[in-house]
Image (cartoon, rainbow, N blue to C red):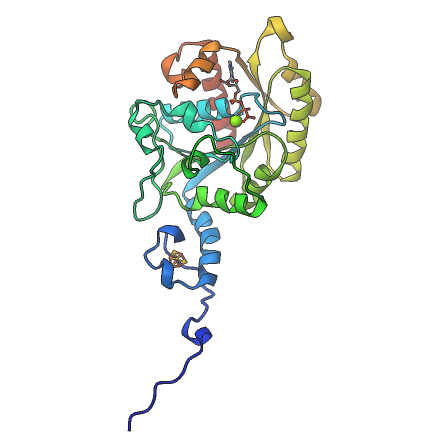
Length: 309
Ligand SMILES: Nc1ncnc2c1ncn2[C@@H]1O[C@H](COP(=O)(O)OP(=O)(O)OP(=O)(O)O)[C@@H](O)[C@H]1O
Ligand code: SF4
Ligand SMILES: [Mg+2]
């Protein structure tokens, strides 16, 4: 008579491993997904964020207290200017409720527009979108916009889900080696900046954007205070949509001086920025000689100089 096989409980059949899994892909695209032990999956993506970040030199956030002051415009502009200068850039559109970066950088007739509703995967993860392969080949981007059914859908996710998604935007993408990681954030001092700082662990600098209006300046102060609470060094304040006839000169500079933070310069109001953003094109590429493009390029050089110090 042969011995009967031992009767195992479910717990014995599926032992929980404590060590992190060392696969560089996200769990969602893993061939072992169904057989994998839950506990490993839970810790894998946090570990993976760390692995992805090891290959990225600088991490930067662009913030503002007030909405509509030009954060996304400047984040996109800085990303293009960095890539045009030959750097490798990862741009994460972490504005879950209003992801605008694809609209601003992906022209509807471009190759990148074909991925709008179908991201490509390789065996490491999601392949970042390269919006301007000829002019800015080093710029890779990912946005929440690619994960929602329709761009018109309102996203009403609560805290833990949001954090999980932001983590995925870092962990599940095959970023490879990058010089700079840039986050575009929603306005204000709410969940997202805090979540990004927690997930990424170390942010090397925050750029605070304000228009010259009093309300925007008051809210910009809150962003500076938030950066202090999160231990993120403030690289400085930048004035966007400068129009001296309307607001007078140096409004943001005065606030920066009062708050004792560096003033990084100003970007003039230029109507071409609005039209180009609607067409998914960048003033840095289309009108490099314009004052606005020159100012964004100078801002970018200043930022990279500060990060390299
Ligand atoms: N320097 C500029 N000159 C002219 N228009 C600009 C300039 N900067 C931004 N804009 C325009 O202002 C509007 C708001 O800009 P943007 O979406 O970048 O702001 P935001 O701070 O990211 O907004 P939100 O808080 O909603 O994310 C857009 O239509 C953009 O094209
Ligand atoms: S599902 Fe996730 S944790 Fe499990 S083996 Fe695959 S990558 Fe690793
Ligand atoms: Mg924005």
